[in-house]
Length: 103
View (cartoon, helix red, strand yellow):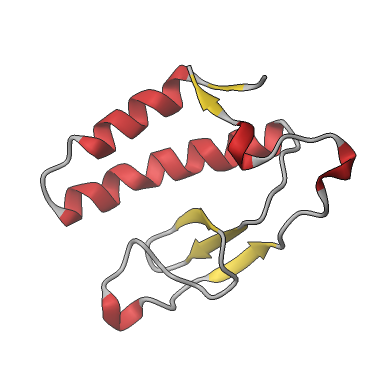
């Protein structure tokens, strides 16, 4: 079983402790960056896409192909560009997102 790095768990804890939306959005940036890097480093594909927002200069992963920007309010919810398409079938032996666990 592959484990997510402790760094990711700490970043998730920081996000969980935020008290307002602005702080949560800022805490989400490094967490997303770390998760995207982990997935890339381990060739993990899944039913998600990586999306990048040039306005906040940050990426995130989501399951839907319709952009749903977590960094910007409702008026700019669709701001972003899909950088990577969803992965192929799981017959290649790579881990699914359900198989990932935090240390």
